[in-house]
Length: 187
Image (tube, helix red, strand yellow):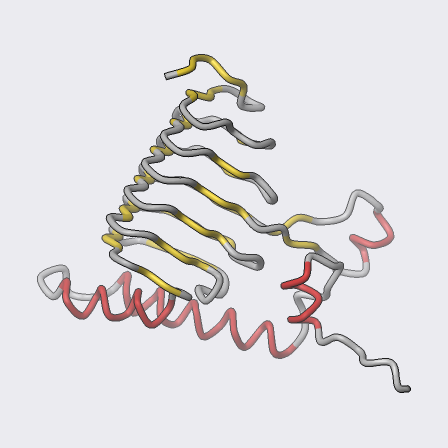
């Protein structure tokens, strides 16, 4: 039996070390950036076509309102529930799936990144990285400038305070703040 070699994209989507410099991945990121560029330069009075661009970019959306400027890596790994809202300057680095529940609001300047680089300097020097999915529950509000790191799950009804850096899971019905984010209140 022949051993099947995984593509870099398959490695990326499985959470294994992969080379983001792979031609296929470079081309997919370039395509997503072209769509983001068109979206960001689109006529603000033509929201219908702006939404069509987002729908063509995302893996799935049940209703998204996004303010320009918006940026992502691939787009096809972003899944939004109903009533998703992203304010100006949101960046989603979606090398792995980013799944949003219903009624999620992102304030200006939110950064969500599924990608990470190895701690081992030799692996970093080779250009390898990993990606872990991020899940954000229903009725979540993420404050201005917050950063959500790879592998994090945010529970329903949670609030992430402005400027927080979320490095671990956030339980439902909590407010987290700080660097790194810690539970400040149960709602």
